[in-house]
Length: 409
Image 1: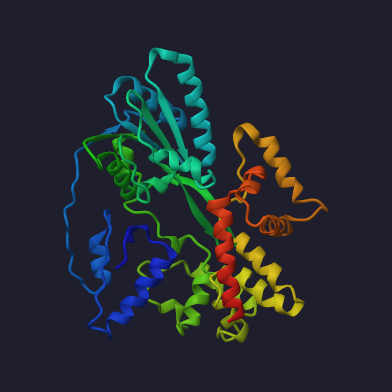
Image 2: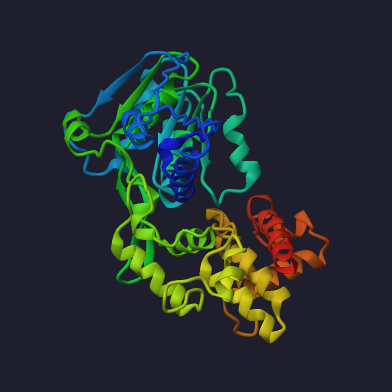
């Protein structure tokens, strides 16, 4: 069973192609694809006219409100709309979708200033931000019950579209934007771009207000924009990502004809060629595009191919332990350091302490892990050095153990 299939991640798209091929030879294999906002017809066609089952869930009515004209500053519009809801609407918590940490921190500061100016004229507004680099204990505040007579406002990224269910949300503010990873095969660079969401995402966001009772969704864009400017579905990750890890995985599974692999949405041929060039440069493929001995070893690691090659090459220089630690720290995906707005200078000084000797980020990350290990994995040490202990460092430690096991085997 594959859930949340509409998210169309790299892994799920590869999985779809593999299990579709397997199912043709395994009539006993049952595959269930589930999602709340799935383009069911497209999936049915892809899986050889597979039957579609619709299971009605408990849904409450959601009132959708659009703006009469496009908003020039969607962040300010979201803040103003939040305060209007707080002052004029019946009790119920608010969920605001923003694109990232910077916008969330700006909105939080702005809301605090404006509510402070209104004083006791309005009910208490509890502001709860949530983003990847926020410490776990602060993230958990979004799940705490709202006190009587107060209202909670959650400032979140698009992680709250499906991954989180927050009780008490009755109002959703949707500016219509998100940060999306994009890949340029000509430069070989990935970047995060602020882009309009899809209609499927807009429906997901609106549905957050109707989970436990009737709700309202305030879309900060016009009905015309929704109907004519938004794509029906989010662009699949496979069409906007570096495909080196995908190509290496498929080659290791014995799939050599990548151009004719049955992708649901084929990736750009330019991105596939760039991936092949990179893997050849890393000695993972030979001139015929076949997997080499080095490539087979690289494919064993659940890492970006360049990090995998780094570990394989470390054997020659007798520094595998340190290189595996660095690879694990780099693979966490988010910043190891937490930089609270009211203590930015202290946090920056703590970070610079790991750069003594004019070392780069890689050695600094190794110093962080080794120092944490020397303190017997102390949580207090992490707090003192503004380091994300549970969200990032613990994950890096678990990842390191896994990588070391793969390396030894």
